[in-house]
Amino acid sequence: MPDMDHPKVQRVLADLRAGGADEERIGRLQVLPDAVRTAAAAAAALGVEVGAIANSLVFAADGEPLLVLTSGAHRVDTATVAALVGAEVVRRGTPEFVTAATGQAIGGVAPVGHPAPVRTLVDVALRHYPEVWAAGGIAHAVFPTTFDELVAVTGGTPATVG
Image 1 (tube, rainbow, N blue to C red):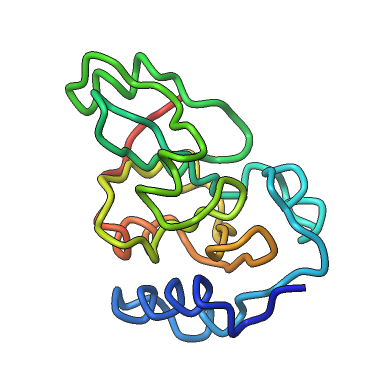
Image 2: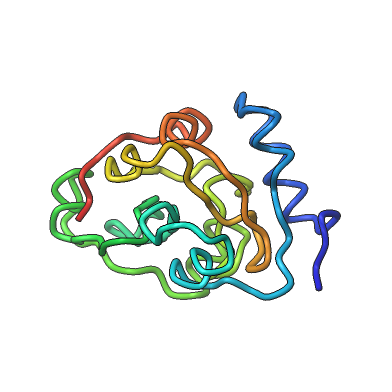
């Protein structure tokens, strides 16, 4: 099982600290015994509602990476997202595209810890949960955060995405 010393986890932790995330929440990052590649799996492992999982979905918006942090309770509407970002075409990123944009594999993509900043939308549905959980850079790692903190650490734009 990967551990807290994994370089991708360490990069996420460093970016959270650099972004001013709450140190107590950062300290609650967990490396789970099993991979949690879906919102449902993460919610079950953590004992929280699926809506409290911040899915990190990477899209190609006119070929440029776009990270959408969405509640695990619903789907992203790509036409809505295209209109929000002024793109003609928004498509789910291929595994290769996601890894190139974030340095992380699908199922473990964190909101931060990427080689370069990625334009980010943060689903306003996450605002309904006092605490949300996001991936920590690998499929076994998760950390707690808040809607406001996600917006702050990612430089993201709050949006209705679904």
